[in-house]
Length: 123
Image 1 (tube, one colour):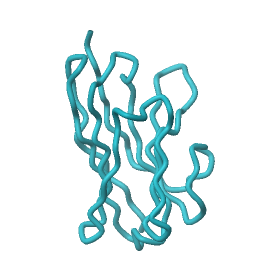
Image 2 (tube, one colour):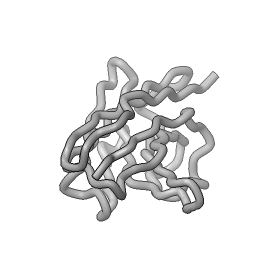
Image 3 (tube, helix red, strand yellow):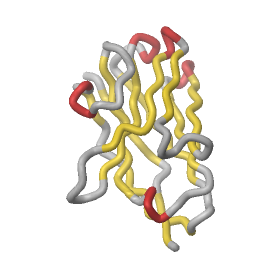
């Protein structure tokens, strides 16, 4: 069974940092595109990053570029999202998601999802 488990969310003041983790199990991490998608209640999901190890491809959305970075530990099947200089508008539930195709920021691209982790940034 393919599973994704996020962790690392929490409450932080504006300007602070958090590191989210996404641990994958049940599939070869290297063969999948792993995306980070966030959602604010009542708003559409926003794809903010994607990584595919096989192609060594990384995408970071303009809305978070320069503040968020991706890193991975293939041995641990884990993808990290380092979030710095957090802003109140970054408040959302953050999901990691996976699929076998190309990297994409479209949530509909991904078949496999974690349960999400809440990030709250106070002003």
